[in-house]
Amino acid sequence: MKFPILLLVLGSFCCAHRPEAETLPHPNIVLVYTDDQGYGDASCLNPGAKFKTPHQDRLAREGMTFTDAHCSDTVCTPSRYGLLTGRYSWRTKLKRGVFGAEHACLIEKGRTTLASFLHTHGYRTAMVGKWHLGMDFPGTIGNRNWELPVRDMPLDKGFDYFWGIPASMNYGVLAWFEGRFAKVPPSQWTKKKPNRIAFSDYRIAPPYLAERRDDLMEVAPDFVDSECLTRFTDQSIKWIRSVAPDARKGLPFFLYLPLTSPHKPVIPLEQFRGQGEAGAYGEFMIETDWHLGRLLSLLDDEKLTKNTIVIYTSDNGPENTWKQRIQKFGHHSSGPYRGGKRSIYEGGHRVPFFLRWPARVKPGSRWNEPICQTDLLATFAAILDKPLPARSGEDSISFHQAWTADKSSLPRRPAVIHHAANGRFAIRSGKWKLVMESAKKAEKRELYDLHLDPGEKTNILVRHREVEKTLISQLSEIVTSGATRKGVDSKNDTPLWADLVWLPR
Image (cartoon, rainbow, N blue to C red; front, top):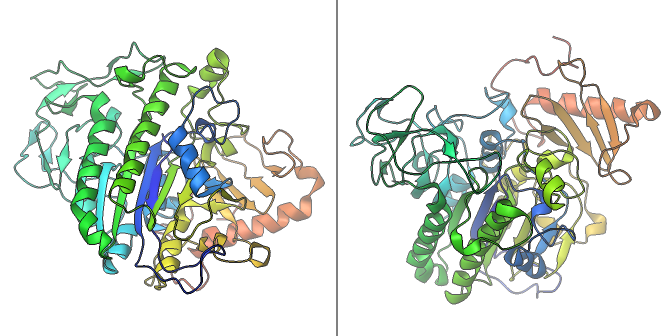
């Protein structure tokens, strides 16, 4: 899936280089979320990158780089749930894998999200891009009534405005939705077609078919895969321009922009062909970065840059084609880390994470302690100085002190729990990472010192049994208690399940 891009404007906290007396309205927030972008796909994080990402590099230069940031899972649906709710998705009924386009939304009715929390505190909220958390479409496949509204979707989860697509393009129901309706209904049919631009890939592009077959996906006559990034950015710019006058008067906005790149299909526009030295994938990342630049320029033009928080990050590590990019181009999408998308190792869940907030965050600063994308909800609450509602943000720990306090005095974040697409668990505390065994006999327990061995090459479990014992205790407590945050009265949505192989049942 992708590296997401996030823009935020924060206004109530001070950084050491800003006067304490200065007060600002609540910041605007722009969160850009890429899809399957690896840690090494940002040129400022990878000295050996075979392409440049100047606008991500600008965010790093003008804001804070989080070098030890993690998505909450290693594939689309669960990572997006964790990002938006501040709760690990394995606490829900989704224990492995992802949803298709049509499914009951994973975010249950009434659960606090980034959007609903900010909306409660006076923000205008919008989502433009790929949802992939489940939607309720009218009728059944082959028997739709697109004059009826879509339910159980972003407008029901705290967003005032929605423009985008339901899920990854390989799941169908492909149309440009605005609000609850498709602009042009997905009344035709298609299947994956060969992609002659990128290896091991496909296309979703006309011509489409009028007659349904069981092996085909629903698609709108005007849908073309290569238009996603342009359309999403255009709509984001249009929406920000519509709220900019009020934002300049102190009425803040939140934009969540989950892009579809560099997830398959890898289809860079013609103007980016031949750029970089990593084939079509590199060109697609260059295009992605270019659209980020369009947003940054808009904020400059609208005089919103100072008090807007921009966050850029990704939903998981790079697709398995990362192996071919190493062999063919010498480009390491996971940077120095092991594995990629779906994996329990660092390459599966350590992602780029940049946060720029000129009003509060020191340019060129870095934070090298672990954070998780679940932490955004608590961080936003801390920025606004507002409490989280009961039974919300169970696994969300604020990191706003990274730019507001003496870092030497900060308490360490409670352990981060990692989760792979196959259900395997790991726990990270300080420099230690304990990877748990799985139901597969070949997947044994492993321990790594990430300070000395960031590439997870040497399993040192047998030499550190006390560390193992401590980490298992922490993991078991967090998994079974229903929350990482202390004092949250919450439970998992299911009894103990088969992937918790170390727990007695």
